[in-house]
Image (cartoon, rainbow, N blue to C red; front, side):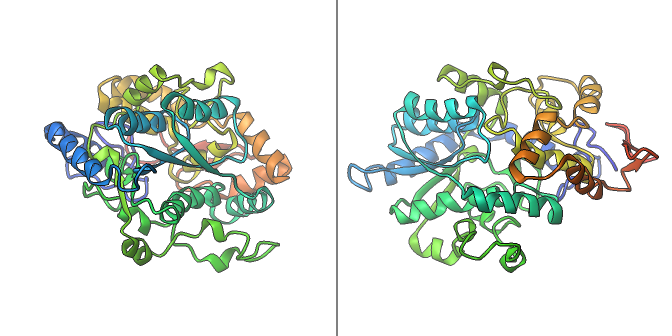
Length: 373
């Protein structure tokens, strides 16, 4: 297990590549963007918007995939306020909303004067899928993530809207298997979430009809329609802290108005659901890092914090699973706490963790220091 020399991302992150100098691809890509001509990129975005503005008469010019979070506020601000487009917002509801999450989604509509079409998942199916996905693939929110990918695309084509905006390109911004910078979001249509073996889920009362809504359209169908999915993060600097500052000016609220969560170093990222955060926590069990590492690494790249000052914070926070996450997840799925922890035990990476005689797991690694003891 080796760590990036600049940030705190380990090489256990799937798809992340390190240079010979020990720098992760996310840091390399961030540095590349320091020479980007952002004025030229934004002019390119203006031309794209000009092409589609008024294409549906008095209807919607484009669509934005949103959750109601800080990035959704930032995206809508750019598209509606700066570029004067008329967007429709597509959103997928959570299995357990925080009050702040609902408020922020409502605020997104009210602050910017946008219509929102929300898909609320079938809770009966979701209960089964969340439990099954935790037990079998260690990614409990897989079903919801599949819906988040599929719903905006399906709705855009159903409504005759060709221009669809997403936020940042996760592969380029944070390092992944598709790390070439591109404005087109077509590459995300080829990831592991949108191309599963669906028959694997057809058991225990789950039928193909139950999860058809989460199936992604065929990419050729998208191309024939003329769908243009775009990463807004290609056209302007993508900075999660800056996005938060902008979002606050438009009424976005952070989570501490409602709930102080353990294991997190911020109170404004992924705050619309509590139990959803079990999914990123499982990265800690499998790969030795979680959301504290993700956010700390961004802050280091942004120049807001140093690597050394974030090491003890990440070491404390990443390993902490908020009790509210456990309570909400077990209540939703019907799992007992004992059943829950037995399933969690099987996802610990034995190369990174060791279990003591009482069943408690301990990391073999120290954050920021290469190799495992």
